[in-house]
Image (cartoon, rainbow, N blue to C red; front, side):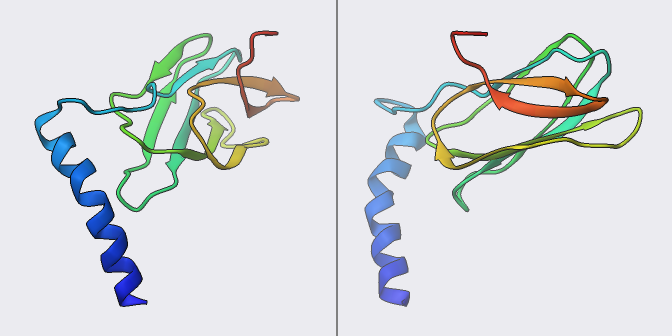
Length: 120
């Protein structure tokens, strides 16, 4: 098990060294969340890797939020909670996605999160 972990870290070393000088680094677009509800929401963007820090956010009614960084971190979950009632609806969940555009919508007084598509 330790050999697998060390091998995995050795594989990531070139990526980390490239990231250190910020040259030739590929990354996913920053996560952007649009709140379409009539109330503020608090929530968290969860990322797949232990090397990625989750992002907490607060979005006022009919406003949006954009993360300040992302790198090569895949999104696994985004949850949102109504700041007035502390209730939450359906979270966006994935095994890990590179998508970056999401929407918080009202579902009978509770905020739910979905991926934004071209159809919206």
